[in-house]
Length: 103
Image (cartoon, rainbow, N blue to C red; front, side, top):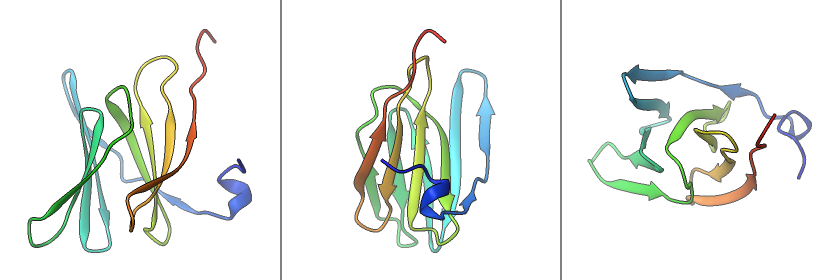
């Protein structure tokens, strides 16, 4: 798996909204809103329709988009939390990078 830098991707991270133990990451991707909901990622369309990107084992703590708004990166919390690359158009997970434990 090539790193994001070697793929020529520029990343836009719009940060996270945090309140106590509940953490939500919110991004705007073209005409969609993308946010975390526990271990799921929700992609909400303007008409209210939703898609769910599933595959994380732990709550999603970080989201970032490439400059074109087509590749989503998600990272789960906890030691050893995985990082996933998603094709935002299809909802397909393109790659999973396992986290590292006991650093």
